[in-house]
Length: 409
Image 1 (cartoon, rainbow, N blue to C red):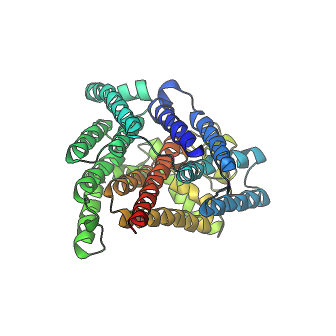
Image 2 (cartoon, helix red, strand yellow; image 1 turned 135 degrees about the vertical axis):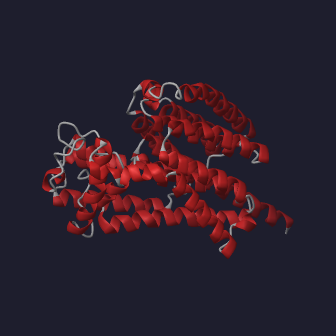
Image 3 (cartoon, helix red, strand yellow; image 1 turned 90 degrees about the vertical axis):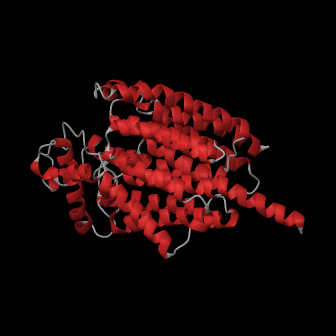
């Protein structure tokens, strides 16, 4: 049966993605791991669809593919970059959407034994990460030596914690273990992580029942307080990202500020469809150096030069200028689609666990994207696949609940 095949092999693929796209990605230095695993997932998905009698395709996925076809044609029309650059960026931009829709469409289901093994694996790896975090108090360069950057350490803590919570029974003990596992990310000193840690801790313990997910004064007040808390703990370093950059004291931060400010001009000048694929703030726009940087006079900024484009893809949101205002609207609609799905499944099943993990996973991406191109990176592939898995788990619960109700009738 095709679903049994999916359940078995998707589990193996999921674990492999966690290891090679998150935990060991920067340790082993194989930077094409996410592209390779993305290709494997695509083949896996095509095989799944071909073996189903009805050839099921998600309508939203079809629309997404259609949008990318349009933007590819548009990019060639305005000559945003070379053909190689456009196709390279197309692959990178499509990767997170493929990861989500493939996982959601195939609806893999992990057995209790598989979940227990994955929990133990997450705990074992977490134990190995603890000494690294503690030693960083003595020598902060330990992160660079082992994991290339503190952000990678924090991301490993986040992914391990979220997967552990997904595989747990979601008891008070499990929530405490989750927060404990997550807390080692504080060693990274990343402002983004400080904000996410507050969000996760508050969300997990407050929103513990579906009755609290209501649009009323109390819920709005609590949500605002959580948001204020997130901003407050990250205030000092967020100022470092967006205000101190003006002094030029930190070259990488200056490049990031320039990308944000220039994106506003691009949104205006290339209204409404943007500057096209491989043109701005993406890996492909640096690899196949885009003339946009010269046009806007930022090709002399350290980290954005043709010979040293180290920080061209250092953040995600400015890259939306490639797709223009229309692209921003489509991006927002995509996330509205996802949130509507998870809310719909929540109220049908009243199971809060997968909903909370979904919100936290999405929140992690939103926060990370401020100063990192996480959405289209190796971590983005894993998180988007995880989001698809979470929604499919909610959908499975809905179907099982409906089947039980029919049996009673």
